[in-house]
Image 1: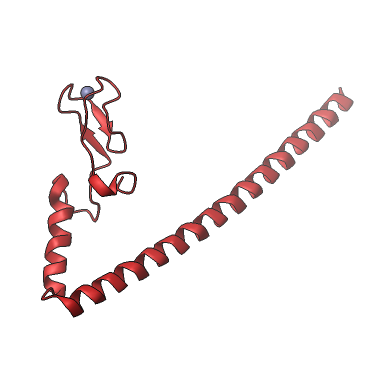
Image 2: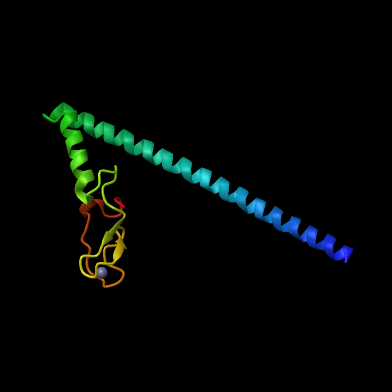
Length: 123
Ligand SMILES: [Zn+2]
């Protein structure tokens, strides 16, 4: 009985150790993923700033017009939330909720339309 209890405790410790190693690897993977995403966001911010600088220099556009356009695009999905599209929309055919990432409704295969050049970029 005492031996069983000891074995059970050792087994539990082994499982905890394995779980701890898995958590550690997962945390390391997530930290690398966050670093990659931060690098991509920094690169996109730099490209956006470069394009806007060129546009302001070579056109009559100004910051006020840019912000009006940002607000207009944000409001396309009916919500001023800093996002271009709602992540979930109602299928116009079967009225079920579907992710905007899909081009066809998963339930009725209704064509949900395209985001044009931004397919695969906008969620
Ligand atoms: Zn549908």
